[in-house]
Length: 179
Ligand code: HEM
Ligand code: HEM
Image 1: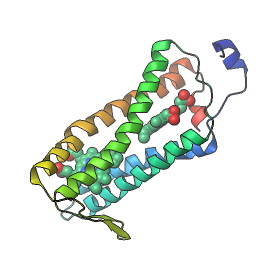
Image 2: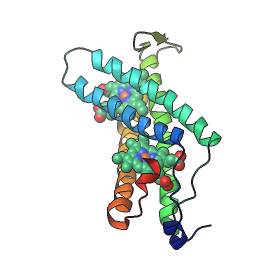
Image 3: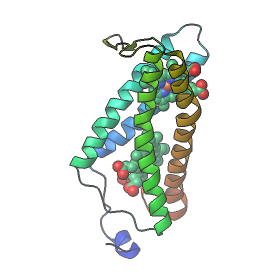
């Protein structure tokens, strides 16, 4: 275990390069997936919701690869901080992993129970692999839009808020570990 003095005087421990690529790649994919919704709301055809679905499924695959990478690569030692902050950071990270897996799964279930296959950039399709069911489609739609999405917003804001707190107030160079 390091204490705050030895931490600040030892060489900064960075995340492995693969973890850094996966981290910023998932942030970018989340942004693009959300941007497709914004564009969809201002469009008069379905092209952006089709892209939303394809980027959402891509984010799912990215997260699966990211989690495999997390188990295969070393993690830098935790930055010394009060126990409750460490616990909140772990909770937030775990929640983000689970929510970013659940969101696309629920999105695909919403589509297929609604009787719609999901096109992945026109390359291939996830077929309707269930018997369409309107009430289940509505259930997954509500979960996607009214439950999981607000949770993603909350945990992402807590996460970015914490990163800014480290950067601007604690000035402990935490963000450089992920740069
Ligand atoms: C992590 C990945 C995803 C994120 C972050 C995400 C996010 C969102 C957001 C923010 C909305 C709009 C919510 C609102 O109206 O307030 C939405 C709607 C929607 N999403 Fe996703 N989504 C993801 C993956 C998917 C996937 C994989 C599919 C389907 C294959 C999908 C299908 C849809 C559909 C059909 C809507 C429109 C629902 C409606 O207007 O009632 N999403 N999504
Ligand atoms: C401006 C935006 C962001 C900044 C500055 C940021 C910064 C960071 C930093 C510095 C860490 C490492 C913390 C440590 O070393 O203990 C981290 C970890 C993490 N970030 Fe972000 N992040 C941002 C956006 C996001 C977004 C949008 C997501 C969700 C897709 C996300 C998900 C995660 C996760 C899951 C971890 C934990 C990594 C692990 O323990 O495996 N981050 N972030």
